[in-house]
Length: 267
Image 1 (spheres, helix red, strand yellow):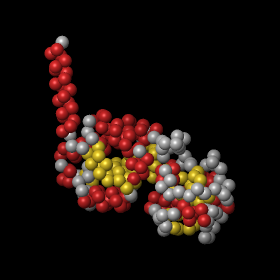
Image 2 (cartoon, rainbow, N blue to C red):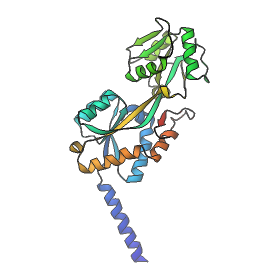
Image 3 (cartoon, rainbow, N blue to C red):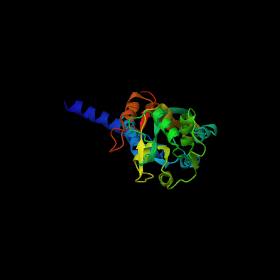
Image 4 (cartoon, one colour):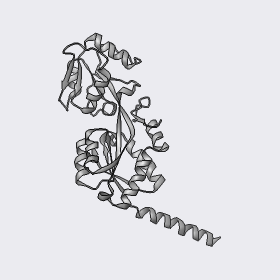
């Protein structure tokens, strides 16, 4: 019996030693994923499955991840699908661009709600009400917002002067409130009050036109070396696994249990 116990202890120790010898994966993650806590849950599940640590080396907006990834050896990068991400691949910084999640924008409007949008309205109904009300619609100078608004608005005829393009980054929602208007805005920063105005309310819609994909990619073997490259491939594959996709589907920001903010690519 003692011999069996001794063998078990030796084998267990060897496995633990093996896990400790695996270098931690260094990742650059878009801010919404780290700010909301979703990335931590995915990384924890990966670590439990593969015994490979994951360290967030950089987080923030796209331009921050771009600059960091070009200057440092990053094993995996994930951000919204964008020219920024594709350029990293085109320049040989990363490879294997892989869609693995989506997030959604919401319609945000002044609490006076001049278009009389109801919480249960479908997106098409809400847009028709916006057209009829001639309410101001402010579009922030963001590639994602422009893309979403273009997809949604192409079927509607807004009155001249109804659309306002705004370059303000800080206090953007204050501009919307001053005009008693509406805007499209990311669900995550709105719910987490990254920008906040007490006069604003959000309307969520289960509509694919409001969703934006995230891409993940791994560093090239020439940049990160053979061992890291193999482990990065494991993490990339894990992101589209049933386990990770279930985490994405079930994730909610604390206090908003009825509002999904991430959507799996493999439901």
